[in-house]
Image (cartoon, rainbow, N blue to C red; front, top):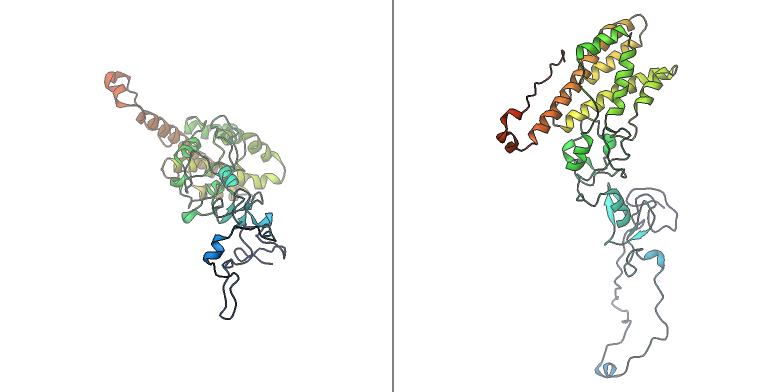
Length: 336
């Protein structure tokens, strides 16, 4: 039997779809109809009948099967089942998330109680491993309305993902990181002096200093260690640099700033580095340029955080002591 809602295959005797929780058959009208030539089921009520004492029915009505009753409201007929726990639900306790039917209990496990049930109610799928940002572990929740229906933070690094739909408290949690400023020119110089060893270790550590947004965001140990696995490190070069680029650019988008690290440049750097005889161009020219973009972005991010911290301080604090007002100079994109 196919579900009329999602076309998923179900048992022939199934009343509700095991995939989406909706009824497998269209609703029927439970109100009985009387044909023209059909006799009414009961006799007309007369004054004499009303005066007589009530008598019990000879045959009690058959109980409604438990499978057709709501698990939470025993006097209500079930209209679907929860796609997560399989419990039957009625129209009063059923909740739809991303087009899938859930019971009220399972729906509350995916939406924080402190956040209204709206597209902004988006939580992480896993806790942050780094001490740079600690976010409570929650079950991933899909958007329930709007153009992002069915999306989760697994799509956060996509360019079409609108960070403005995130709940304010979640957005602030995702902004926390442990990266520090470092002179861009010195980072490029150390790349040549150490023959690239500094680059692998230093920027590999950045993976643990950034908050974990997606479930497959990896730590510094994995980022660096997998680069030393023969053959597999060819694939991991793409994963290492492109994910670092996405995670840094996501930090800028959380602050409503443009993405400073060009993903295409990093992709070209990796591809050219795999071609024999010309891979020296990647190591000596393209990779240092990419390092410059990455380190400059990190320095600008720290400046933006410092400026935001200053703006959050009440003006009355500086009005009483103008000499205490700190001065922050924006970092140079190449010389810091």
